[in-house]
Image (cartoon, helix red, strand yellow):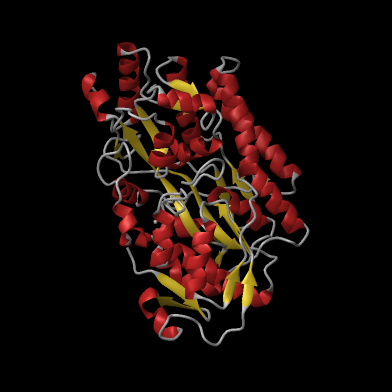
Amino acid sequence: MRLKTRVAAGIAATALCSGLAVTGATAASAHGASGRATSHAKVTLTWWTWTANPAKVIANFEKAYPYITIKPPPNYGSGGTFYAKLTTALASGTGPDVSQVELDHLPQFIQAKDLQNISQYVSSYKKDFPAWVWSQVSSRGAVYAMPEDIGPMGFMYQPAVLKKYHLAVPTTWAQFATEAVTLHKEDPGQYLAYFPVNDGDYLEGLFWQAGAYPYTLLANGTWKINVDGPIEQKVMAYWGKLVNEKAIATAEDFTANWGHQIAKDQFVSYVGAAWSPTYEIDEYLTPGTTQQYAVTALPQWKAGAASNGNWGGSTNAVTKDAPANLVKDAALFAAYINTSTSGLSIDERPATPAGGGRGLFPASLARASVPEFNAPVPHFTGNVNAEFSKLAAEVPKQFQWDPWDTEFANYVTTQMAAAAAGKEPWSQVLKTTQSQLVTYAKDAGYSVEG
């Protein structure tokens, strides 16, 4: 999920016991006929999360492992508010045993040595996740978190509107640009899509899909920053040109005005993620709307290619403040809630009181093993989760995040807003961002090339 505002899932489910991974089918025999542990001292763990219905997650876990009690997580909100609380707590040694951390924020906490290496307890789960997902929680042979959910990107469009204007579903970005121009000329009140000038995470997802690597951690511990590289500049120039031509709209996503734009059917399609149908589209549509969508792959930079990006996603990590004697149990909790059949069922249920779930698109390859996977999504045709599962397999493995994702977002969105307002050329956006980010990283004590 994207932490800022919303939640962004086959192999048999697994559980972890005594440092050994066992399948859900054999968990009961390992813990007695009821599946409950019978020879463990009682322990209590603390867990911080922003996901919906945490009580359901806890009850499900404690049913399988009654010797472990999970304290209800505090309500610390999301986004910067959550991370400020977490950073402060870890600095004072009062952090939770397990905390949710987004994929793009993991390097920040890994570099600060705030997370524990749990590889000895969870390495057997590597096969249960896409290779690119496991690489996101691993660094230099260590594993610092269990993947929870992901946001493989996709193209969500209204077939009826494209048909009305005799437009095809674009398979390349060149075709997308041509059709964006045509559509807006035919109907000045609609745009093929929007470009969010306030969203650095969205931009990085586009970089990922294009094959860019804006950050690289070298073997000597130096970070190479290349946010103004040729591929990144290609992506920025492409969207900047469409904005300047007024062929697409600019927007500030996850704001009230953006929600009104969606409700008014201003956008015919969305370049979004697996969580977008529920948390980006359906959430803002008005009752009785006739909008109906389908999902397919993103347009490609090269005809016939099959490359995708990821926008959002999170993990559960064991922090440095978890006592040594509780790390194994903390790792067990992080693994079970994200891989067991019962855990995945809760993950995929709607994130409402009635739904009782977390509204996630699970990272686990076993996501399709639960009935909730095939549930229809309002205003969408076909099996939405199945389509996004196919797209998840097309995300390149090598992409890395950096420890300064918050700073990158602040710098690049300031520059994108200026470019959209005509105050600077789009070609300057990433140059300025690169300079600011390199300066920040060096001042923060990092070894940096850029």
